[in-house]
Image (cartoon, rainbow, N blue to C red):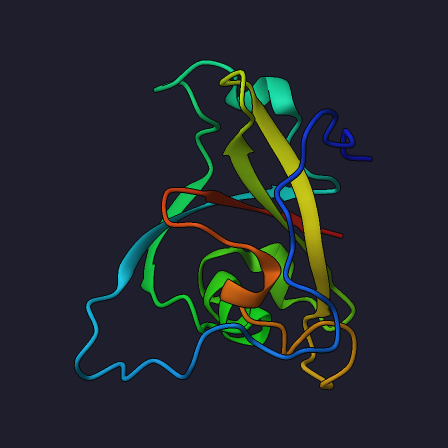
Length: 142
Protein backbone atom coordinates (compact mmCIF):
# COMPACT_ATOMS: atom_id res chain seq x y z
CA UNK A 1 0.00 0.00 0.00
CA UNK A 2 0.97 3.63 0.20
CA UNK A 3 3.67 4.87 2.48
CA UNK A 4 2.24 6.60 5.50
CA UNK A 5 3.25 10.23 5.68
CA UNK A 6 5.75 10.58 8.49
CA UNK A 7 6.54 13.79 10.25
CA UNK A 8 4.49 16.91 10.78
CA UNK A 9 1.05 16.99 9.26
CA UNK A 10 -0.90 20.08 8.51
CA UNK A 11 -3.58 21.03 10.95
CA UNK A 12 -6.97 19.99 9.61
CA UNK A 13 -10.17 21.94 10.17
CA UNK A 14 -12.10 20.80 13.25
CA UNK A 15 -14.48 17.94 12.41
CA UNK A 16 -18.20 18.59 12.34
CA UNK A 17 -18.00 22.32 11.77
CA UNK A 18 -18.54 22.18 8.01
CA UNK A 19 -16.44 24.00 5.45
CA UNK A 20 -14.31 26.89 6.66
CA UNK A 21 -14.79 28.68 3.37
CA UNK A 22 -17.98 30.02 1.87
CA UNK A 23 -19.09 28.91 -1.58
CA UNK A 24 -16.95 30.09 -4.47
CA UNK A 25 -18.52 31.95 -7.37
CA UNK A 26 -16.97 29.96 -10.20
CA UNK A 27 -17.99 32.61 -12.73
CA UNK A 28 -15.95 35.31 -10.96
CA UNK A 29 -13.14 33.32 -9.33
CA UNK A 30 -10.11 32.21 -11.30
CA UNK A 31 -9.53 28.42 -11.10
CA UNK A 32 -6.30 26.92 -9.81
CA UNK A 33 -4.09 24.41 -11.59
CA UNK A 34 -4.18 21.04 -9.86
CA UNK A 35 -1.49 18.53 -10.82
CA UNK A 36 -3.03 15.05 -10.52
CA UNK A 37 -0.95 11.86 -10.55
CA UNK A 38 -2.74 8.53 -11.04
CA UNK A 39 -1.51 5.02 -10.31
CA UNK A 40 -3.28 1.67 -10.47
CA UNK A 41 -3.05 -0.48 -7.35
CA UNK A 42 -1.61 1.95 -4.81
CA UNK A 43 -0.52 5.50 -4.15
CA UNK A 44 2.85 6.77 -5.28
CA UNK A 45 5.46 6.83 -2.53
CA UNK A 46 7.09 9.87 -0.96
CA UNK A 47 10.26 8.97 -2.88
CA UNK A 48 8.42 9.26 -6.22
CA UNK A 49 8.15 13.01 -5.57
CA UNK A 50 11.60 13.48 -4.01
CA UNK A 51 13.21 15.25 -6.99
CA UNK A 52 11.51 18.39 -8.27
CA UNK A 53 10.98 18.10 -12.03
CA UNK A 54 11.10 14.29 -11.94
CA UNK A 55 7.60 13.64 -10.69
CA UNK A 56 5.77 10.53 -11.93
CA UNK A 57 4.93 10.63 -15.64
CA UNK A 58 1.25 9.73 -15.29
CA UNK A 59 0.16 13.32 -14.72
CA UNK A 60 -3.06 15.09 -15.61
CA UNK A 61 -3.44 18.83 -15.14
CA UNK A 62 -6.87 20.01 -14.10
CA UNK A 63 -8.17 23.52 -13.62
CA UNK A 64 -10.55 23.55 -10.68
CA UNK A 65 -11.53 25.45 -7.54
CA UNK A 66 -10.94 24.82 -3.83
CA UNK A 67 -14.62 23.96 -3.43
CA UNK A 68 -14.38 20.98 -5.83
CA UNK A 69 -15.70 17.75 -4.34
CA UNK A 70 -13.98 14.38 -4.53
CA UNK A 71 -16.94 13.24 -6.70
CA UNK A 72 -16.18 16.00 -9.25
CA UNK A 73 -12.52 14.97 -9.28
CA UNK A 74 -13.48 11.28 -9.60
CA UNK A 75 -15.50 12.08 -12.72
CA UNK A 76 -12.58 14.02 -14.22
CA UNK A 77 -10.13 11.19 -13.49
CA UNK A 78 -12.51 8.70 -15.12
CA UNK A 79 -12.26 10.71 -18.36
CA UNK A 80 -8.52 10.12 -18.64
CA UNK A 81 -7.84 6.86 -16.77
CA UNK A 82 -9.56 3.77 -18.24
CA UNK A 83 -8.97 1.75 -15.04
CA UNK A 84 -11.08 4.28 -13.11
CA UNK A 85 -14.07 3.57 -15.37
CA UNK A 86 -14.50 0.01 -14.12
CA UNK A 87 -17.82 -0.37 -12.36
CA UNK A 88 -16.22 -1.64 -9.17
CA UNK A 89 -13.20 0.70 -9.18
CA UNK A 90 -12.31 2.45 -5.94
CA UNK A 91 -10.35 5.69 -5.97
CA UNK A 92 -8.23 6.82 -3.04
CA UNK A 93 -7.18 10.48 -2.94
CA UNK A 94 -4.04 11.82 -1.25
CA UNK A 95 -2.47 15.26 -1.03
CA UNK A 96 1.23 15.52 -1.80
CA UNK A 97 3.04 18.48 -0.26
CA UNK A 98 6.43 19.37 1.23
CA UNK A 99 6.92 19.09 4.99
CA UNK A 100 8.87 21.72 6.95
CA UNK A 101 12.15 20.11 5.80
CA UNK A 102 11.19 20.24 2.12
CA UNK A 103 10.58 16.49 1.78
CA UNK A 104 7.35 15.55 0.05
CA UNK A 105 4.77 13.60 2.04
CA UNK A 106 1.74 11.72 0.72
CA UNK A 107 -1.33 12.03 2.99
CA UNK A 108 -4.52 10.14 2.20
CA UNK A 109 -7.62 12.34 2.46
CA UNK A 110 -10.57 10.37 1.08
CA UNK A 111 -12.02 7.56 -1.00
CA UNK A 112 -14.76 7.31 -3.63
CA UNK A 113 -16.33 4.61 -5.75
CA UNK A 114 -16.34 4.88 -9.53
CA UNK A 115 -20.07 4.21 -9.79
CA UNK A 116 -20.89 7.38 -7.84
CA UNK A 117 -23.31 5.96 -5.32
CA UNK A 118 -22.92 8.98 -3.03
CA UNK A 119 -21.26 7.04 -0.24
CA UNK A 120 -17.78 7.26 1.24
CA UNK A 121 -16.19 10.71 0.80
CA UNK A 122 -17.92 11.92 -2.39
CA UNK A 123 -19.11 15.20 -0.85
CA UNK A 124 -15.80 16.19 0.77
CA UNK A 125 -14.38 19.45 -0.58
CA UNK A 126 -10.68 20.15 -1.23
CA UNK A 127 -10.66 23.21 1.05
CA UNK A 128 -12.18 21.42 4.03
CA UNK A 129 -9.64 18.59 3.65
CA UNK A 130 -6.77 21.04 4.12
CA UNK A 131 -5.78 21.50 0.47
CA UNK A 132 -3.44 24.41 -0.22
CA UNK A 133 -2.67 25.88 -3.61
CA UNK A 134 0.49 24.21 -4.90
CA UNK A 135 -0.29 20.78 -3.43
CA UNK A 136 -0.42 17.83 -5.81
CA UNK A 137 -3.21 15.25 -5.81
CA UNK A 138 -2.27 11.57 -5.97
CA UNK A 139 -5.05 9.16 -6.97
CA UNK A 140 -4.73 5.43 -6.42
CA UNK A 141 -7.13 3.41 -8.60
CA UNK A 142 -7.96 0.05 -7.06
